[in-house]
Image (cartoon, rainbow, N blue to C red; front, top):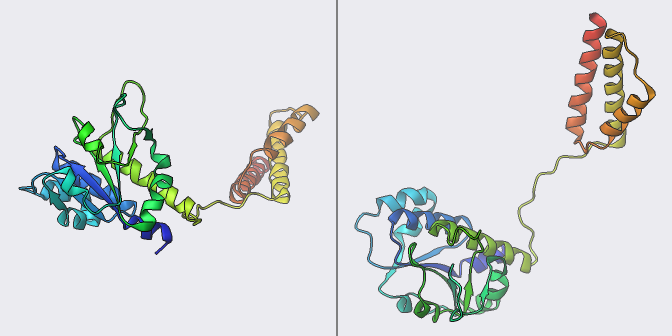
Length: 250
């Protein structure tokens, strides 16, 4: 397990009064995908957990089944060294707010010492000022002016993603390697350009035209700056050779 993943096991997602079981399941799935292993819900246990289990999918079903149910926010956040509140509302009475991309830096010292809870409010009202008084850090997800808030599960997903990315960066670990195809070498590009010129000349001959010096120069320049991969250059070269063969047969 990487250092970042180990730190994420000390994070809990706390949902206050979610209105829809499906959102609980979707939030569980988002949290699990990013390495968070604990889910706390302020409210009554679900009479029918099936809708939540369905949106959680089998991958995160254990998070739904293992929810710690609490009667109040105060009870839910007991035992956490730092509580991060989330809100879409801004005002003079609100604490100084950060954005999700800053959350890792803000919580890392607390994670080094203990556990951290990230608190999300109800879908329709969000967290109250009293709820936020329990929080040491408050974050908000900036949105376009006409949209004041996100779906609960979307907010959990964005926050957990930014937290994980930040922890990976701060702990000096590399994220998953991205596949980057090998770029075409100068020799491969030259072979492709030559094949393109031959195909262009064959087409011009069939049309009773000739390839002018200006067109030749522009064609070379265009083909040389395409930034193709080695495989793409070979495919294009082979296609041009096929054109020449067909024109010769024709």
